[in-house]
Image (cartoon, rainbow, N blue to C red; front, side, top):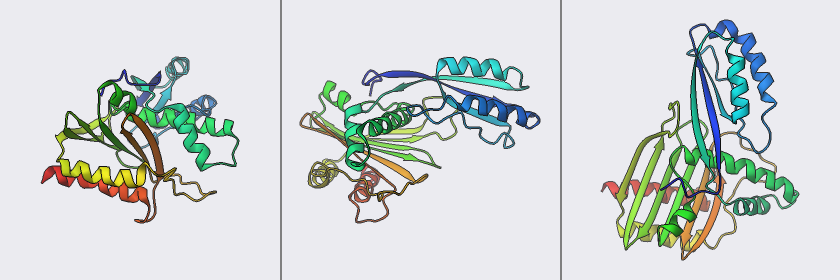
Length: 277
């Protein structure tokens, strides 16, 4: 999948501060954190978090735009440390109107402009995670590459590596791509392992039957009750491309095997065994 398949690009920076004596500058570092926290607004990655300077002598600021990055670098010059810089791109992988429509269905009582803000924030978040694993706009890729059928399951996890599974059919051959994030990577891309395997047609048919019956006929799979906010867990994005049509559904840590999203995840994960047998 090529990075040219995107709905826009943003440049971002990650700064990693290391040093044996960082603990001596915690007061100053906290002041710097507070000074730069004002740059965090809706529509930007909620970054600039200090990752416990006492643990391993390492502090990471992530998701900085260029002006903030340059200002922070100048500010950190007074700290006795080593500064590593990572420049990376966020390629927007989701259509803004599709994501906004998803939020409008989920929160019908919230003003549309507020849902638009939510969708912008999540689009940047999801696209950053997908970009870091060399995954881009599924529908643009499928359309340009003449893909007949394509599905992608993205699993964004709070405390463990992200996973992306993608299956597609082209020229009557089915393929399965399975990527695991490198949780400890210092810069992008953050792929620990990536396998592309020819998928048995019976496995593709199993996915198709389930998705035809449940995915393409559903308005939403989101199962978190109104008024409940989940801070951690796993966010699931389900994307589909079939007959020139694209669809996106999502869920957050489905709590029952009766949920269609739960069943879809189990089905996608079963492909790993199918390709190993």
